[in-house]
Amino acid sequence: MAKIISGKELSAKLKADMAAQVAEFPEKYGRVPHLVVILVGDNPASVSYVTGKAKASETVGIKNTTIRKPETISEEELLSLIRALNEDDSVDGILVQLPLPKHISESKVIETISKAKDVDGFHPLNVAALWQKEDCVLPCTPKGIIKMLKAAGVGINGKRAVVIGRSNIVGLPVAKLLLDENATVTIAHSRTENLAELTRQAEILVVAIGRPKFVTADMVSEGTVVIDVGVNRDAETGKLCGDVDYAEVEPKASVITPVPGGVGPMTICCLMENTIECFLAKH
Ligand code: GUN
Image 1: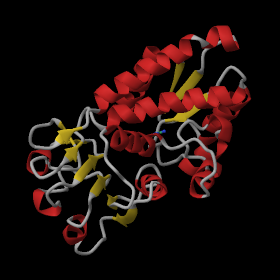
Image 2: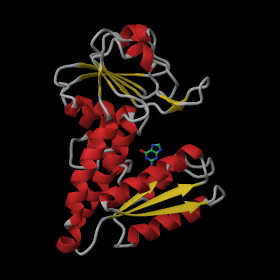
Image 3: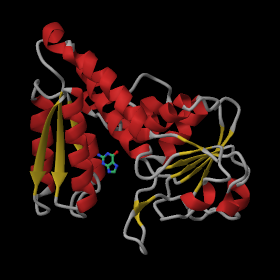
């Protein structure tokens, strides 16, 4: 029986602590932090994530403005909106929900957000700072994963960690954060040969490949710590499921994160933390 790390419970505790902190801001700084979230189009998953971000903001006492734009918005119009928000002193954090429609360049959008308001930690200057071990806003999902491991008492120092997935949002930055905690890190992906042989050597396995129930029991060893970043729909049941076949893998794992209620809530929690960090950096 694995120990289950509830991201839902841990994030609730962390958000309560942040709420107490933010409650003092009006007196100390004259206002609360302000996060602006931009959603282009109406992708159901993105709508759900953006709603979650607004709810968490309310819990923590952060002002949230969600700006919805149609799928047809031009790249220039979106970039102009971001530039205006960069100039607006009442705005501390800007998040553009990804993915964006094909006619809009994600990298141009990310580069246009001011580094100081980049609560996602996606701006090239923040990415560079992460890889140079300088102070920076850390990407929310990787930051949340490290917090979960630490809260569960998982020692990372000297451990063999395997990350499946090499995205800019999760795979690469979580590998770097694990490396900074002195894990020995291997990044695997869809083209990795003999993947199961590799993942069976992992003491910590982080899965962010975006394929439902991709990691099966034969791919993990007894006692592995399993972090499941996936959010997928199970084709058979229509229910949310992760990248890990939870029913199969949980009995072998020593520690595991559920989907839903695992990494997802921690990502949002870290977004709140990053918004507060950006606010405090200004004050
Ligand atoms: N889409 C999926 N995850 C994320 C995230 O962490 N930030 C943004 N901006 N978009 C996302």
